Length: 365
Image (cartoon, rainbow, N blue to C red):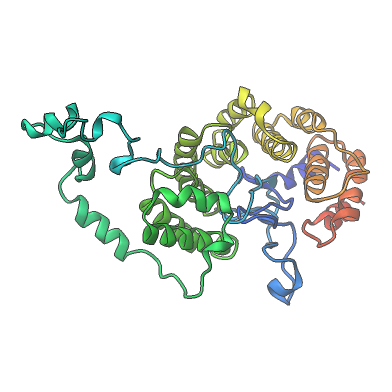
């Protein structure tokens, strides 16, 4: 295959590798390499989806967009890293502050120093925190609530991961229920209607801006909708709140979507990579290989994927993604004969035909 032919499979879109991707709702895929079957969603496991261009949702120009998209996590939420403390604010009194010992009456019937300060004309911090900080705040909040997308009846918030529901307990009950329902709708719609999914995710974030999982959901929905800047902003905010590596692969791929592969490589070389599990490391490696290909460093892209030890004896979605990405990288590096082995492995383990490995292998024939 000539160099010009091999480069046909590297899209200018800087996103995706055509391999299947997992949705934040838990086990299915973001995209695929082949058109859907006539039967629609009934022909595949719940949530699995393929499109006719081989990449993932966003602004794509060709079906040859075959670099990967990062995976998600459990129902209704993307992967998260770091500590298990996922509450958006410490529990305590109003205003998000922990209880204070001097915030109660003392033994002589009086009040602690903070209350005494309020009696002398000072302003209690709790009351000050509850007031809007700028003119028009309440009107703006009401306007946002009225603009929220409708929620269908019959949504069971128990479909969310219990840890997500625990995160939302810092909110009032009615607000927590609404946030949970918007998050469920965002996860359900993310593959088929990413723009509407993003509206639901934004509604959840506007109601629960201090809850990390709400910001994560908004970030991953923005990523699906091709809103790369918004995705980065929300995911960075979530990382500041919860700690840990967060969704490094999604963030790196968003940098690629903005045409900044160097920034993507910086994220891929950060110390936080050591905190990722195996699947997340594979996802990040696929994105890093894509960034190298964006820079036309095709041999380096092959090396990046070799570090994840692709193996023809492995099975599963992660193995499928790695095999496909590795085969594609070999083609771009001018090593088409070597790539056949990995396309064949991808075909063998691609139970639901989530990639276009058969077509790619035929092209090499």
